[in-house]
Length: 453
Image (cartoon, rainbow, N blue to C red; front, top):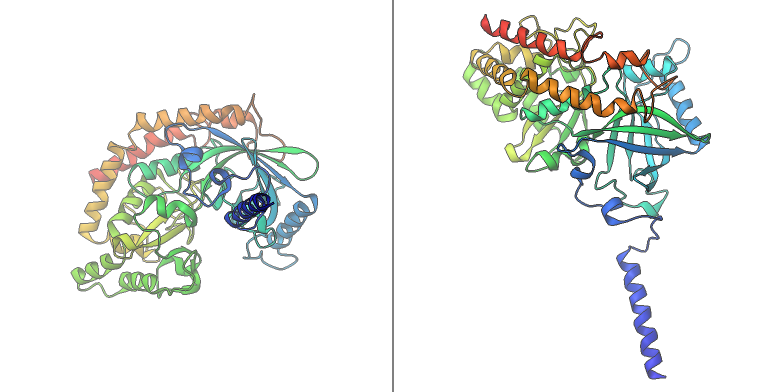
């Protein structure tokens, strides 16, 4: 009898130990620490630079949640009679996501974008850009507490708006990062969505890591600094820093002193140029910004600072004394011949830009900074942006995704594409409007001409 009691006690203790180790939660079927757990992000699995792929993402949304998300878009984007569109983000709804036979449950999904989202929605195009947050609904469904997607909490899916090639988002980020400018990693994905009537092919997307998630830890020594996503007039840096326009993505309990110091240093009196430069460089990574600007103006970007007062982040890097680092975002409009805006995105030396955009005007008015900028232009076209190198990467990406855009694996069609016909995609590198290869040659010529003067 004594031995039996001992056995029962041992078994009971083991069961309690298992319960403690799993935090008392009954995890969903298929949950493993490597796939769903709060672990270091698995960049090689999702974003391998050595082996580009086209992932497949399957999303299932309950019919009522799908309709609620659409009703929310209709309300916020239409604005109603005499009302402007809402500035509020679309709502999150819970979805189930399957990737390589593994399912993640109760993932938060919402649609994203500004003019691109409004344009697609009002045109009846269902290929909408969206965000995922894998722990958004953990309070409602505690069994997914700290759920991750191979270590990532958040993920963004870009829909290729204004991009017949469907490679600009990834190609642009790869180019910036190869030149030493921080940029989010990405990979192509075919996306299927089931809103209750079976899976529908929403098309070829670019899956992009969220800068507020793991990117800082991956590309900086220390990821504990403040990350801001500026938006609105204050994002121009053309006056006093406006806290409401520097939306904080982390460290919500901290103040805005680092951003206030950087904007204040830029706007300070420049009669004593050396003091102005010293104070600015103490708060803002000037040379990193000029390096970014050299890439940006060479390849062209019609939805960036200097054209629009959004689509960038700034990070107060503790590994660099807390100086703000400029981080680009949203690259579907890079390498366009013209974006329809009078914003000088195709200008190399940017002499036309007014003090409305002081990060450009004030820096390039300084002879030392201007010379550094010119040196970066030359280094970029001689190296990372060398014509044959870039064209080879374009061909590789175009060939990789073609079977998922024009078939035979899957075909973008109907209301789930921005392409007028398959030929738009076929011609997007060589002969179509805003074709990429002629653009590369044209921008080399533009930079060379600018540097000769």
